[in-house]
Image 1: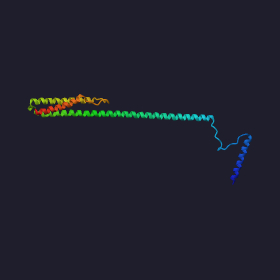
Image 2: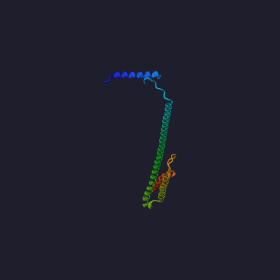
Image 3: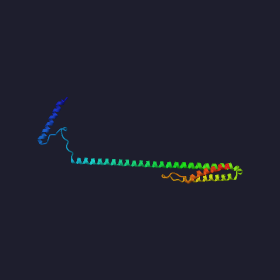
Image 4: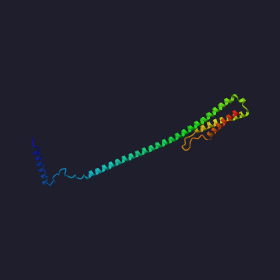
Length: 196
């Protein structure tokens, strides 16, 4: 086996001879990598690094701008969806109000029709026994009940033709009010005919 210590000394001696030969030729002896300062990069390498840095910065800026534009677009889409949902909610509230008004008018029409039919059936049998004032009151009551029915149908047509408008609620107009008062008047006249 070879003595490693002796080999290392021989290697150091060869290296020292080589360094001495270089120093006689005028070349500076090589420094170890630990003590040797790093040489400045050649100018071309510095330009390449600057160019690459600029490219990376531009790519990052473009990516951030693209992300910002995407986030802005998503925000606008969310606002549009929220606005559409709010508008749909307002229209739904208006539709429900129109449905309630239609239900009220249908109830008035049904009440008027049933009252008229009941009075026709009740008094049809014994109309001969009713006096003239009772007949007049019954005729006025029937006219009012039929008028209430007609006004109710007219108001239902107006509510059905309602176009949802956020500025005004569905309205049956004067016909809705008249239908109620004619119904009340007709029922009162028919009741009065019973007493006369």
